[in-house]
Image 1 (cartoon, rainbow, N blue to C red):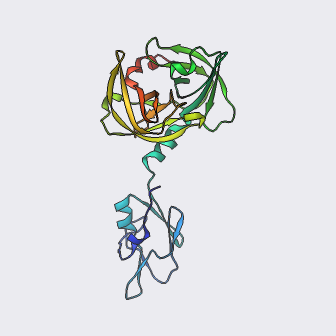
Image 2: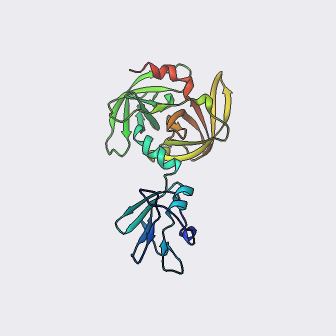
Length: 261
């Protein structure tokens, strides 16, 4: 939630009723104002005639705050941040992965699309056992490799899950400096939400990749989803170092994902 200063309320007069846009005049009634369920001690303005005005209209309109009158209490709720909206909408679709070979344990990330788990190929390549942990679940479900791309660092894992599918975005519409949000599992910390920036496109080994900066994605994030602010996946992270990450644009693999039934 965005922080809101009660000091802005002092001296602001409002002609507003929460439900009917009429004047709210509180005469000798012990009203209290709550913002995000926190009581504001001195939020109201009293004039020389002893009339108290609730400054709901101007505050609500200016800051996009939802205001409700319940009994003798006024409740004002600030809008959710971009990150809160993405977390609420998309986190259930993101997973953490452990893949085992005879000699190596690898940990990575992924996301659910049409009942499959999408991840980076280097996370699950050659694995004899794959454990998929869905969000907030204590126990894993078993996964098996369904498909790997011959050149891209992309794998599709078949795993039983009833988690919702992500929505695919359009990576061609990205603009440099655009804010993005990733949900990955760096160093085994499951489904960490990270704000980052799209920093451009580069060509490597005849492929097109995205550069993502100002990120906390780290080892274990590979295969995880990067979302735009509409909650659409626009890239799959495939590695890098702290602060800068490389990703496969979602448009490069839409045809592959479209065949998953």
